[in-house]
Amino acid sequence: MLTNLSIQNYAIASALDISFRAGLTAITGETGAGKSIILGALGLVLGDRADRDVVRDGCERADITAEFDIRLLPAATAWLTDNSLSSDDDSALCLIRRTVGADGRSRAWINNTPVTLQALATLGELLMDIHSQHEHHSLLKKATHQQLLDDFAGHQTQVRSLRDIANQWRECQQGLQKLQDQSAEQSALNELARYQLTELEELNLGQDELESLDKELDELAQADSRLAGIQSLLLICRENDEGNIRQQLQQALHVLGQFNQSKKTDNQSVVSSQLASIDDMLNTALIQVEEAADELHRLAERIEINPTRLDQLNRRLNDIHQLARKHKVRPDELIELQQRLQTQLANVMQNADQMQQLGLELKRLQTAWQTLAETLSQQRQQAAAKLGSAVNQQLQALAMSEASLSVQLLRNESNVPQPYGMEQTEFLISTNRGQTPRALGKIASGGELSRISLAIQVITAMTSQIPCLVFDEVDVGIGGAVARTVGKLLRQLGARGQVLCVTHQALVAGQAHQHYRVSKAADGDKAHSQLKELDSGQRTEEIARMLGGETEQGFISDESLAHARELLSA
Image (tube, rainbow, N blue to C red; front, side, top):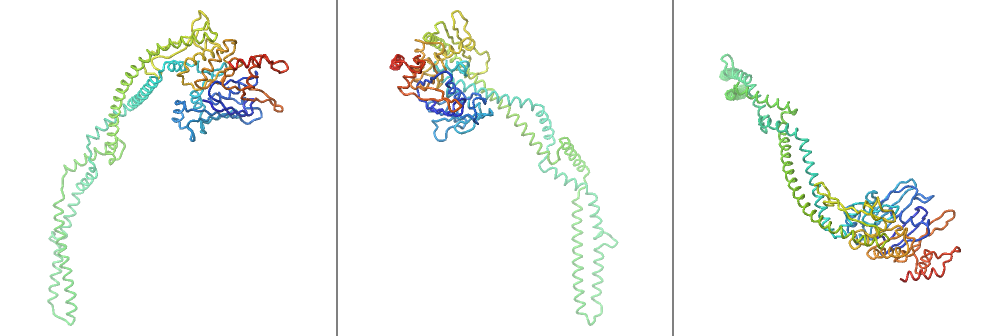
């Protein structure tokens, strides 16, 4: 419920701070004193649009703050939690602030967190419902009719289940549609991928095949020239009959041997030592030439001259390079391309499986929704007749004896699961005998609509989720016994929650648990509104004034005071 409302620099109100309690709160005062300021301020914190005209003259901005106790409001608590807007210090309280600048710009906060106007309006619908001739009221919305009927019949659990199933169906349908759209968009690309993958699979390129092929091709392509070079080296080393290296080394060793046998000299020891070293080197060279020749011979035997294999290699490499050019990749990227295409087509198969599963889930949800919706539809048919009859009895007591309200269930022709079920509820009203029932907004006047709303709220009071009701002059055009009945009905509503009522009727104000009077006073050259909670004596005087007991001199007659005391004591 609303616990506190602070208003600063709004219209002619410079500063108002109002504490509210549970029950019926009456707000009274002379016409033009500023009663509408309270309703306007409440409208702003509940998400109404604002303009610069609401800012008090000479001020930079209007500032309205409302505090709500939400301990008994699970829907509001859940919404705050879902949107990460819960109060840090006390989850039982919800603080809403709205400012409007002199330039018309507006800002809003929920529990000190900036929010959009849409978020504010959404939360506002969970906290308070304003019924006024000049402000928005939910009774003109078909969604409210549906909620009122289901609250009256106690269908909350079934409605939540139906809404959950419908939401799951919608999410499932959106997921399936997304996959189907992707499949349609990718169809041509997937066909191309299959064709390309077939080509790559037919090529069957090995992981290291390209490197191996290049190496083998190089060996085969160079075989002739390499073999010729080896043979030339063999001739030079030992196989040439006319002066190969081996023969020359052998001849050198022979000469050296003869030289060692020549006549000795005085330097024989030194020369002999040097010649021995040269002999060793020449022998070593001869051995190495022989080994080199043997190695060249073995190498020549290993070199293969294979024109057939060379042709196969050229054709294989040509196929690889052609396919790489076709796909605009390097030859060494073909295997990676093949893997990507395999992954792409695997995803296609996975999407096909997902679509099949989603299709089965859609059928399951459709069946579950259909079963629950049909059961709820039958229950609504029975509850609609009971609600219409009960509301019409209340309308009789509210001086609308010729009015008749009927609760119509409009069947939904679509097979798509809807959150509200198989039908929508609409309240139709006939305010005069013989008149065709029509929508509330097309038939009922402002005062009638307020009384119709009051009758409906009284009937649904035990189960309604609307926590705080505000009625703006629901007593317009009535008096006497009807006004007393309206006051009793409002008090009855206040007994289960909170009702704020702006009224000009003493018989209505006399039923309140809490009474505020709005007055206007001068502050220099500016007027400003004042709001005061009345004690017992002040309340008696206010009720007496409303009864018409104020004289031209501003005095209240003893008769009016006595009447007021009698009314309040009753």
